[in-house]
Length: 379
Ligand SMILES: [Fe+2]
Image (tube, rainbow, N blue to C red; front, side, top):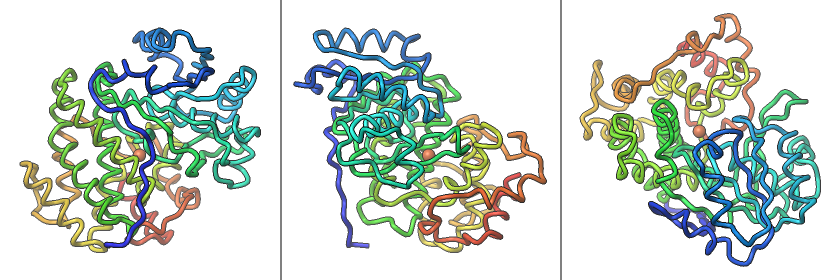
């Protein structure tokens, strides 16, 4: 527990209104590629504001990124950036825009189409261009993590590109930018923070450092997510959630997630549900099936729920964490099951075979049977 390596090299500018410091953060970089999603950065006027703040620089904008960034979109952005000889890639938006910026920086710097790295299971090249991440939602932690999830349309799979080179050189975390996030997305992305905190806490790779951050993030979500869901303009709550999300980027990189994040990907591929939407469906069953393998840690989480007035109808303590979740989901107005996501019962049988990535961080039953049991109970 007390032996760990930890690195947090991203230069962070945090705080309400901190986007105004963009020009100072960008410094001497003169040619910049800006990557954002198709609608919200334009609709909210954020893209325009960004361009004003970057006046005097050569800026190429690629605003063609879908919610699950695709190989073709990354390569298109990389070609635009390479043609202009850009020196810095800015990703502004939710996790998809930041992930797309990271993958694009790798493709330009490595001078290869992004699928070259994905299909050969290579880490991002050393030559990856520097990245500036600007999150507009509180959830993915992509601004401080070294992962980028990309959909490979041709291979019909979602893959993670990873590597130290993908760690953003800079991040501007301005909670004010999350004010325009609608209620349901706020609730779901806020729950994603919780899952990062809980899974990196339960992970067998958790360290004293990451556990401290996990507890801070769990407390922040339990205290402030119900507040912000009821008042989307609450500054204090938005700030706490942006902070917790940023901390969890560090945890994702150092401790890794557990089964729910692995099990969610096949669900997403079959139903097109959102990332947190799939996690909501899986969480109660994963907790019920895993609590006995990490009793002390589940007890700690149960206590965090208890201390904040959440209740479980069945009893108190780690084995009932699944039931505290039901109370929590009600307070933030989300709930689902795999059947509600539209997946037929018989499809469950094939899902365990489609699970990819390492299961070694999860302390529970990670056999095929164990995975199927969670899917069935989540149906
Ligand atoms: Fe997540």
